[in-house]
Amino acid sequence: MNTLTQNAPATGQDTFPINGTDHIEFYVGNAKQAAMYYQAAWGYKLIAYKGPETGCRDKVSYVLRQGKITLVLTAALSPEHEVARHAALHGDGVKVLALWVDDAEKAFHTAVERGAEAAMEPKVLEDEHGVVKLSAIKTYGETWHTFVERKDYHGAFMPGFEARESVYPVKPVGLKYVDHCVGNVELGAMNKWVQFYQEVMGFNLLVTFDDKDISTEYTALMSKVVSNGNGYIKFP
Image (cartoon, rainbow, N blue to C red):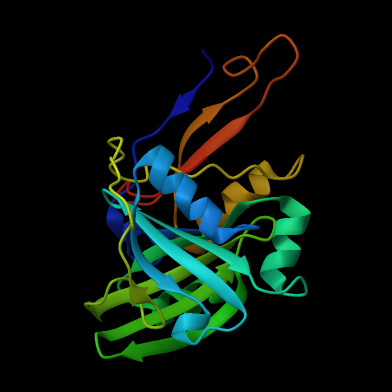
């Protein structure tokens, strides 16, 4: 087996601390239907909602949770919206891999200074439950990394969302946390994106697989796995 394995680096090698995956946001064609599916089939619980009833007139979002996994399912309310365009082009899929950080503003400026492209300037959201600070950078394809700082927030999810509960009993299937998130990148660009995570975030190359490790009679792939210092974030 042609694999290269390295120990994860010390946390101090990270360009900024990342405490884990905050949430994963999907852009979908029908958020209500998708939320029903993840509750009925996978046992996620509905914990929060944003839409016209909460003052958001252009899109709806359902927030689901199981264990330490939080999914946000977002759909547009008009075909001209960016969410609708993304779903029409790609189908239902991940738009945001949100990372839980100590300082969203510092993480943003550090990443941009080291070569990342800005997606969302740092901003502060506030309601009666506290404060959440957000910023975001672009990564492969149309995917974003949103940096989430929520140490002073005690609401269901974040400002703009209302707490909600599943309308029927759900049975969790045993999902605990996000182990890793795979990014399928354009042909010939894998090393470019490995270098991006190494230089922008200080990630380390953890393991490499080639076509001798992962293949069938008709298909094969190559993969390189990068990880942050504490090992909570892994991106093949």
